[in-house]
Image (cartoon, rainbow, N blue to C red; front, side, top):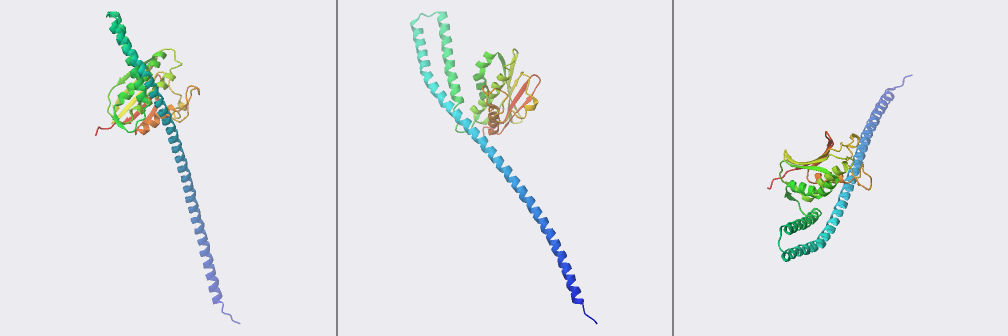
Length: 291
């Protein structure tokens, strides 16, 4: 008895071939699905990171807007105080002049009169300095950083004398900066105030050096103290918002964060390091040509 099984064998071979192709296709699909899943996971992670970064940027902008709003409010308050003080100062000047006219001239009276005039002029200039410091500037302008440095030092000079701090000003060289003079003045005041606080527990020999120089097309402002330095474990945290080692009644931890934001706003940077007897803070800002 004979039976032709050729077709059956060929059909089985085709089925085996199709089965292998299906297995290969299934494996390929699994690999593709795994690759696409990995891509989706990475994309999702990147989106999460972008969202976190945007949230952080918005928080920083909100904090800066809040601080600018506070400064604007303080500026209005200072302007009102200046307005209220100027009239009495003018009247006092006129009264002194009339008194001088009615009194016979003598050396002692003349000396007292000139001293009183200087005091009145100094009070008027102090009011003007604070009013300019808190004024809201509309546009950037070219200015010499030495003006901001000197104004900042002038504003803290009284408290430095009271605390017995010897401050040394070194204006080595400078160029012009394109930005906001009052903001830079504010940044320097922050550094000088922090130096004063750091020296609070030091009984004597309190020293602060304020330096301005230019190097590689940058204006560099440094404030150095001899208060013992910053602990290494907190060095990388001091510019973070709301980080402070002071008592809540003495500080909010926003000063150095503002300082860094001001430096960034001018295309520069801010940093700190420990030196031989204390800490040194640096503000580095790019110089601009008058053109």
